[in-house]
Length: 185
Image 1 (cartoon, rainbow, N blue to C red):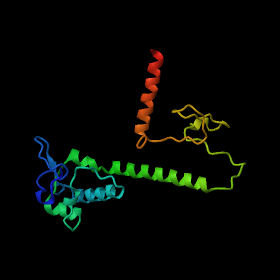
Image 2 (image 1 turned 180 degrees about the vertical axis):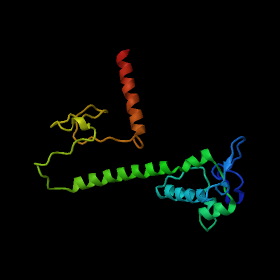
Image 3 (image 1 turned 90 degrees about the horizontal axis):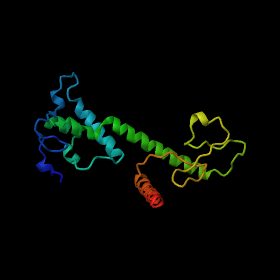
Image 4 (image 1 turned 90 degrees about the vertical axis):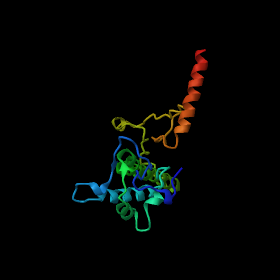
């Protein structure tokens, strides 16, 4: 359960609101760098980035971090601190990867929509090589691409991340294993 804003303890880790024995907290204002407190700016940027793509981690009271003048100013005024491991929830590289993945997915959706809306198809233009084809095989005229689920050939197969498909993959694997086990008995 998230602590309310009145119960928020700025002396504890702002992520988990706990004091963990033998685990120190990091306070950007204690930095020996010339740009003291820049950790709050990067934290604010990360929070806004994750919020932009609707991927803020659950269980953290982000509302308490902004008392009206922005996350950076509030955290600096309150001398906010955090555990290094908790701060990894909002890692910049992870955010960049999520943004890139979302752009790839939206680009693929746009390409599919554009492809469906095209009515004039030039027959002299070679068809698009399936994404499952290897570059070393791209010089061949015909690639026999097959779906790994149904083992049927297809010309519009895609490589996918199992972000949304992991449940279907899981179910398919278990059905396949059940079938194999039936054959063995």
